[in-house]
Image 1 (cartoon, rainbow, N blue to C red):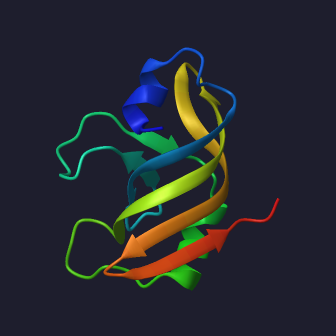
Image 2 (cartoon, rainbow, N blue to C red):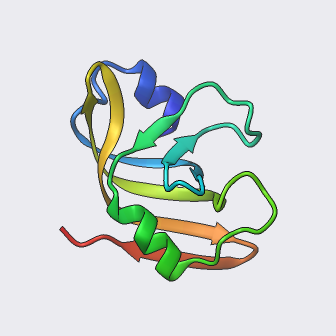
Length: 110
């Protein structure tokens, strides 16, 4: 499933999901997913699971010299939920990042 499909679907909310997208993380620890390869995308799926930021810092080298600490193709598994009327990734169970032929798998324990 991709970000656009989740945000546009009324049935994809409050359930488990596996999303293939670009994982982006700011220096302030804000994590989100986007379908767009370029940063000028409009649709983002915010990840509210605060554990992800620390797990990424521990397991995956940060990017240097760009707008984000992480800007990688990833597969994210977890639970969708709501923040008001907005669909968000409320809980992350697993993240797999492929960067330059190297695979990083991060499991977030409940």
